[in-house]
Length: 171
Image 1: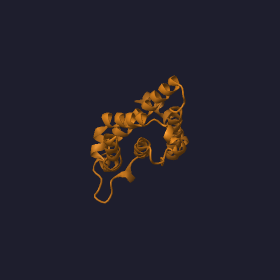
Image 2 (image 1 turned 90 degrees about the horizontal axis):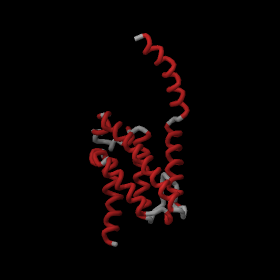
Image 3 (image 1 turned 90 degrees about the vertical axis):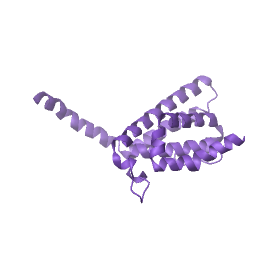
Image 4 (image 1 turned 180 degrees about the vertical axis):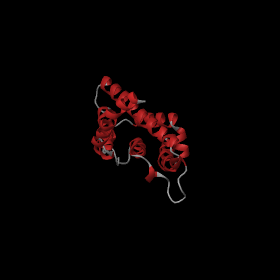
C-alpha cells in the first residue's frame, strides 16, 4: 500500500497542473482549431493531402465521440434529463463540442448556411458535401445509441439531418 501512495503522490499534482493548463475553453479552442485545420485541408487540390486530412478528421471525430459516448453511458443524469431541460446544459465540454460539430457538419452538408462553431463560412462552397455526409454517417453508425437516447441529439437529427436527407433524395 505504501508504494502505491509513493507513486500516486507525484502524479496527482502533475495531473492537476495539466488540467489547469487546458481548461474547458482551452479544450474547445484546441478542438476547434484541429477540426478547422483538417476541414481547410480538404479543399487543397492534392489527393494525398485530402486523404491524409480526411483520415485525420475521421480519427479525431471518432475519438471525440467515443469519449463522449462513454461519459454519457456512465452518468445517469445525462441519459434521463428532467422534464424542463433536454440535458444539454449538464453535458461536459466534450459533449457540447460533439453537438456543435454535428450541427456544423449538417450545415456544411446542406451547403446553404454558414457554420456557427467551425467558422468556415467563406470556404463552405469548397468543403466537400460528400466528406461531410461521410463524417455524419460515421458518427451515426458508431454512436447511434447516443443519438437515440439524448434529446438534444434527437433534435439535431429531426431538424437538420432530416432536411438534408429529403434534399438528397429529391436531387
